[in-house]
Image 1 (tube, helix red, strand yellow):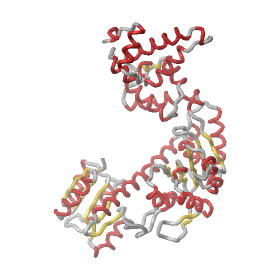
Image 2 (cartoon, one colour):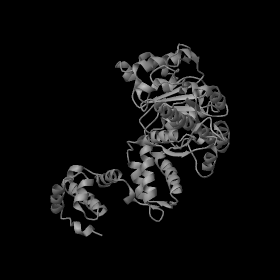
Image 3 (spheres, one colour):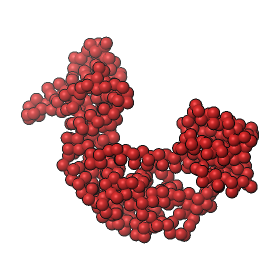
Image 4 (cartoon, helix red, strand yellow):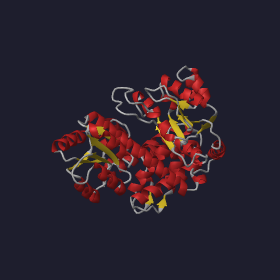
Length: 459
């Protein structure tokens, strides 16, 4: 929950603003003067400071200067009377984010706070990324022993030296954004911003403003000029994930950016040049979409200069344990539970699993097992049921002609399978039925037919 400090010597204003912000889900602290605000900074960290400009004692100008000295990341929003707007604008040169005039419009306040928080998050992310890149050996960003991935990285490092647009395709979780960052780091833009936008996660009605910005008055609620991601990127890299989610109008606008190397803010006819490199990705086949008329053909051909197809994790079995060990180390360190050993059964199960969720799924499994591990040992009983079931099938499948002993093999499989889940569920037939998607009555009949005694598994 984001924390906001409100400073105002008018009690009615404090009460009103606090009510609005708390109803919007913020953690709000109020004080009546600048001196009280500075004391709060000694014991708490705030995301946003909303302060009246004119106050007795330490006023909004002095408070802004001292707050930024104490916390350079804080977002400061000034509240001022109409006649003091020039002063508020001058204070923004000290580091304040924005200002609002009295009486404060509550919707405008919430919009300004949300944008300020987004701005601070983006700024922090880019600073952290730059620091990480400066510390790391960029050639080892990808953990891989896979020949195809190594070929992709070789070609991507060469493409990085150009300014050409890049298209990255592949299933969710295959590392498309990771490759985009790799290209950025190996380019002459590495000291500039890398901005990642998921086109499917931003409402279509807001996406144009987020990408290209807008002028004051461009639409209802546009109370101030807003710079979009293309403007913020400057000479860095813009990464547009799930490009197929763009609606037809936005596809045309992106095509214009690629052709003219410029864009227009909403509500303006002025072309703003952009030096940003554009990398896009998609988990859908853009060529097929273009042929079906579901994606702008001209845009597709403009994007398809250099295309990289990221293989799924199931096609990179040699990389599974590399990532698993990496994630185990990360989560065991975070939870202060060192991992000493991974059983052979677990290794076999992980390598044989098809990983429909790719690296993201493997990361979740790693976190689960790191947390549940006892005595620092990763054992097969910690595996999720979906992985255990597949491994059981692989162990029981015959190496010879299936038809020779199919009835015995099926009975053997059912017995082992049901016993394993009865053991996991402490002999509880109803819980076992729920986990393996059986009706409890059907499972009880099956257990009786196979001669299994659930009581054996009660602990």
